[in-house]
Length: 65
Image (cartoon, rainbow, N blue to C red; front, side, top):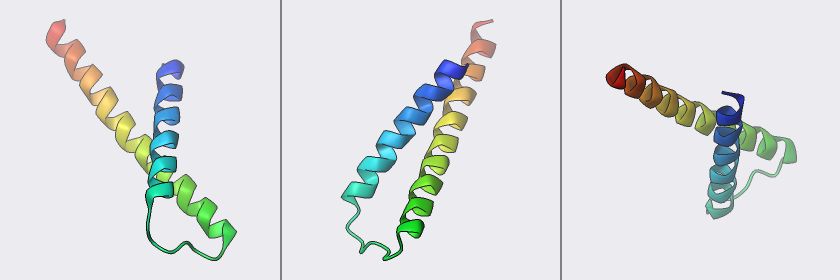
């Protein structure tokens, strides 16, 4: 389970970094606010991917067993 969570965290970090780089909006002048936005987005993406992953694995196990 730790391995799966770590993989999801890496995936969400990569997706957030790509999205942050591709974002065309003007950046906040405050460096602290940039870090807050980045880590909040990592947390949001991590939560969404985790919910989808664990719901699908739970459903798959219930159907197969």
